[in-house]
Length: 207
Image (cartoon, rainbow, N blue to C red; front, side, top):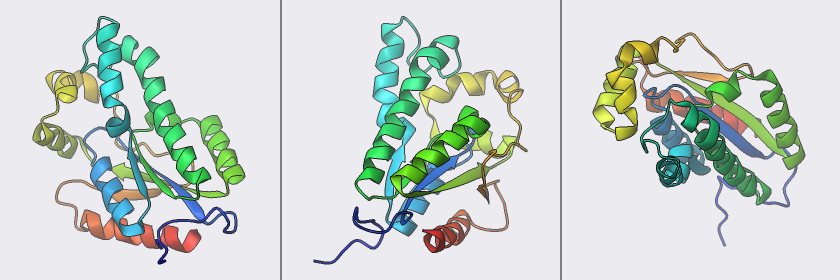
């Protein structure tokens, strides 16, 4: 039987599987980059929104809030931690089975937290997984265009309160851990697919 070249066997040498985090602001193009990376490597694709959005919407409604809320204390304190817990549990289960993972989420708080990054690296080490991080960089105009284009109700607050929302965005922000950067500004000279393929090649060489 032919073996999937993108998958790792539980009997292979430690370090041959990879956990690749794809992070960035809303509208940066994380999901597209994550899908391209998963397609280029054959690794499992786990997107936080895909995994947890129905749960988040029902939870916020049960708490008397707006199902599209992604900014209030109710979301940040009650829903967001569960979203990331679901995403990472799914990632660890794949890694424990020997399958490399592309995990897509903003990871804004997490990627700025050196202690979180250190814990993640240690757990990857115990799981025999190579840790890779990709930061999808964009500018405010490009991110706004993508949010308008995708027409998702969860972006309504961001677009309606754009100056307030963007006051908390630092386009020069980068993860504290070692990382790759993708330039996904509209009109950038190098296509997204080409940038992702280049990063995928480096990851394959490291795994």
